[in-house]
Image 1 (tube, rainbow, N blue to C red):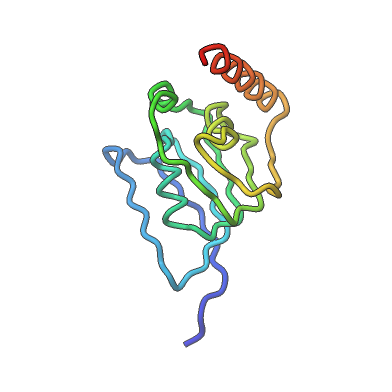
Image 2: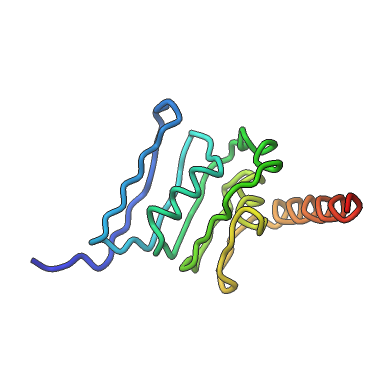
Length: 142
């Protein structure tokens, strides 16, 4: 029996599952590409589970224009930092600003330094402006 070397698939959901999404990993499959297109809102915990279930993912595309519900509470919690150690391509062109911030804010997610990032310029500009304001506020408070 030959081994499967590459496996591409899309994770899609349009059904509410009472906020429970169970992702099973398969050690015989080397997953290197994930397309996330959801009507359901993604929170920090979901991205953590993706990273843990698929540690070798190389390409991630996120399509979700709905804002995160728990963003305000996420900002004030000590959440585990999510690591995508093997990610080479990240496409956030059709993502809400909350998700762009999720991946660019190093207190939430760490990415390799050589990731090819696709994002709408205006969205990136707005997110980085928000990050500058947050940084300034944290310096003033200390």
